[in-house]
Length: 286
Image (cartoon, rainbow, N blue to C red):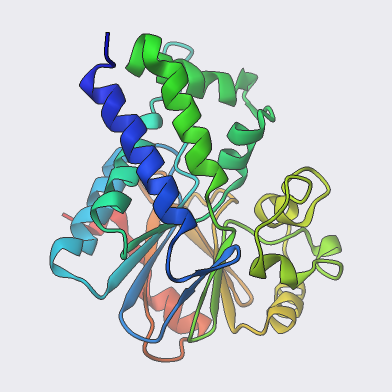
């Protein structure tokens, strides 16, 4: 007996997106390179927030905006409020993968600590609950006996994710930056090649790139000089007000009612102050 249409759609979307991610023409090694034309819409963690994702789709209007690009990360592991609630962030992941398939030259993704943890089977606990188990329960709820096939496709997608993105006007985007104590030993050549499983494991540089916290303006300045960029846009650290500026770095959060996104013009240099003034709240999108 064949899989029900929704499971077929999920697996096909995730695997097609994974193939596109591996062959993205702007990808060199583990980094996406955006040119000096158009607009790049940067987001923070989304954690299953379909409402904000749908607003993002309406804002981007890719069907009539071929020079607009969007960069997504940390889509899975929805925050549940009670034990009876279910993590259905698989819905967002599948929707985003289908968006990539529909607009392969406009929709892009980056690796995050939650996706990487799901791939590696590395447990994350929040409020005493197993985040990985909650996600897998949600997949089982959606796809029943076909859940294992969907999980396999999820892992294929996650394994294909690049680590970062750079723009011609000097902005570096990634899920996070290494902890300040690890910035000096971080090898930037990692970004020019595919990371090994060891580099994606605890203690590895790719792992440190998606898990780092506690950045100071001085640490951010040092890393900007090391990478030769003018500023950073990351996610990872929760922001109740939607964003925070730390020196040359902007932290975005896109997973709640005060969530934000950043439309970045690629055709001119942008200071952090100019980028901050361009930040949009999801609530501003009808």
